[in-house]
Length: 321
Ligand code: NAP
Image 1 (cartoon, rainbow, N blue to C red):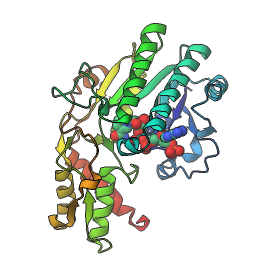
Image 2: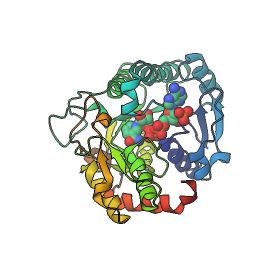
Image 3: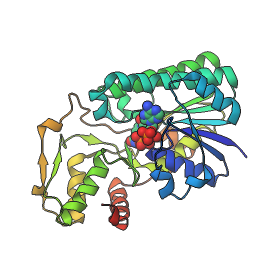
């Protein structure tokens, strides 16, 4: 039985990845913040909370990471913990940058020290690409981050590449584009649109307020994206992979699709310029050929189909609203 450590297990991807690894008969250790009395709702929702060994660990403290890795002896580590909101990173840039980089250094230094054979997955992001000069994005595209979140992910990404090249560690970076699920936090766009649209449809709310909805993103489905994370650590050699659908759609078309499914008039959406970000990627989509060819990752979800699945899941869990 292999052991895997997942940081960020209380988040969206952490829960789906934990469920996937348990299905593959892994012993799964989930790292949570010190003193965290969280409900870990995602793990409970997927029915796997009781099967995971939870350990408190301050990821900003290298000794804490050395202790947990020395005692649990994982073959694989999936580093998903991060301040993951672009919007929040403009409000809190220094904490975002510190956590999203130092925690990664701590994992890399620990692996180098304790057992260089441990394989590390790092959660990189399409936000690193930022000011796009050619589409589709590939693994070789120039990076020009447009937010504190993105600069932190670029720093972490190249730190991982550097340790892979300098110390021959097995470090794979997944450059994931936006991906959604029922477990997405409420402060992210798609979840917000689904939840608030349901409230409008039930007469509990009049409007949905949004920022710049003309921008386009490449959206995918989290439960399928975590399969690619797992595959990245099963290769002969570590590498970096874009994980994306290959198509972009505008935020406005997502709102309209959800409104149509719920018979809501389009004038129930109000644009509030106060919600615009200081800087914004206008359109981005990636090329997933490398992941499909090398990882055997099969992804063919149209995002409108994903929206239908997500709305169905929200409606099934309606008593929560
Ligand atoms: P998420 O739901 O926001 O989860 C983030 C996780 O990081 C949570 O478990 C959170 O713990 C933990 N975390 C945040 N700050 C922390 C801190 N200071 N100390 C310890 N833990 C901390 O994110 P996700 O959607 O699952 O994404 C997983 C990873 O992929 C992240 O690194 C994200 O940046 C990256 N990514 C996500 C997307 C996407 O579209 N979802 C795309 C590209 C890359 P708490 O619950 O305790 O806050």
